[in-house]
Image 1 (cartoon, rainbow, N blue to C red):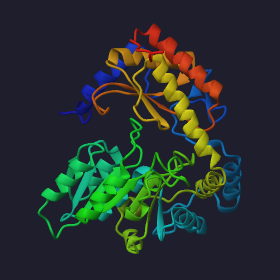
Image 2: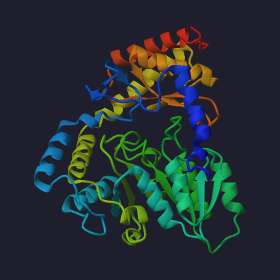
Image 3: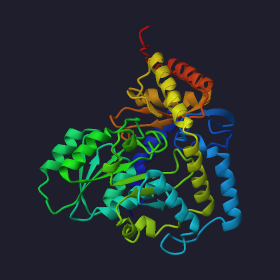
Image 4: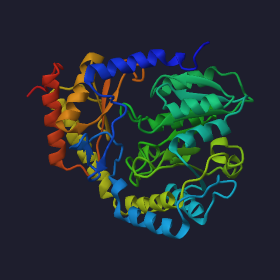
Length: 404
């Protein structure tokens, strides 16, 4: 009899090799206790956290913690139902209004996760006679949403407005709707989308445009509304989706839009209709964290200063870091045999980052993916850089220091 699990034999072998090479499973790290937004206890040691996506450090917001406590005491700890049944409380509607107002949009939908925001919106909007045109480096949630939809899927070269335009112009489908989906900041590499050029393609071709601002919300733009705001093309974006689990430090997802039909999408969006809504304490904490973000624009400035410090440090060490300065900085290594020991040594020396291995990386080379926070101190960044330098030397990673 064929085992249900036989399909995982290759994965089991690959994981076994990763564990054997480093002595631990890099995908099962446990933060035993957060000490602060920037430090956690891992394997009994205080460890600098440079792989959490907690860009503004708001997971430890006092305002959010107090709001969560008050909501749990007054509303309980769960809703026990979906948003279209008994799972909508006044807190949910209030948060949707706050999110819509923040983005200066007509309406908002709040989802239980950011993953579900992409899954739900893409699958609900794109039907069998429509086209989805996706950046080739799109997040898994975007691809999964496209599979759940019945639309025809076309991929274009990463961050290439020219390739997007060519593919749209080749379509001979005047009666089909076309939805372009891009991301503000790409989570693996930190690349930022050329939003003004994408918006120009959208206008010329008559397509709709959705932007996933998951990693750019709270980070880019004068007010933190993301890549579209940063390039002055918000009016060209039909749908903005994102997550609360990065800059706001909680959990959940959202979509904002000026299209009045968004209210109908609620009744045709399976991940929204058939998932229990977020519990009151999470909704309250998210609203409070949003207030923190709005009230403290200096967090964004500090975040970008910290990103510049970390990026410059990697360049000075001679590591192959992302070309653009953003809160996501990937250090690319040439081989898996270099990456696994170095990731393990970094953790042993007190720095946690994300290990990304092919084929899940854009160019089939392994990455040490770092995410910086506004709450990292300059001393913590310097300490992390010193540890990176030590680990690289110990693991035989070739360095090409910047010329003096």
